[in-house]
Length: 106
Length: 117
Image (cartoon, rainbow over all chains, first blue to last red; front, side):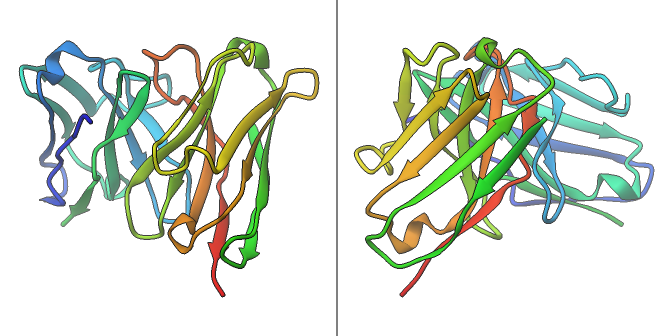
């Protein structure tokens, strides 16, 4: 089975930059999607196919993917960005999620 | 929009049916999935069904116990869960996906399933 590894937690000072990694074997060959989830709510798509931002998602969210690591970057983090973030890929008829990263805005 | 119904408390070994009703988009165009989340834990994919219902896959943990189905006329996707176990307890989300290479771009609100004696 394919595994995705994320850091459990990331802290970022207000207005600074947060980076969340998602590690997987040759993940650069796959499309990676990122979701934000706040307590009690369904996930919200923030980046898809590595680096595309859906309509309505702030420009401070960006993504990249190469080699064995995909990255979600929040440039100029805001209080409302405090949430859990999950990466997601499709692998041989199975949807795989990373374990999730809790982002704390200080 | 996806609106879920069903869920609740059941004893181990019993069964439960979840439903997800779509509106505002061409339902037969989309793969539909179920994803679950133990409170405080991560997301786990459960099952998916293609738009025309001809392709279905399950996670190994639910294979043989859960059945996903859809009714394109009613714009619903269901998850029939049998032989429920304590470790099936979770919030269950339905989600849509245009193709297997695409993301989940719309999710249901989630419904809690608790399996306990």
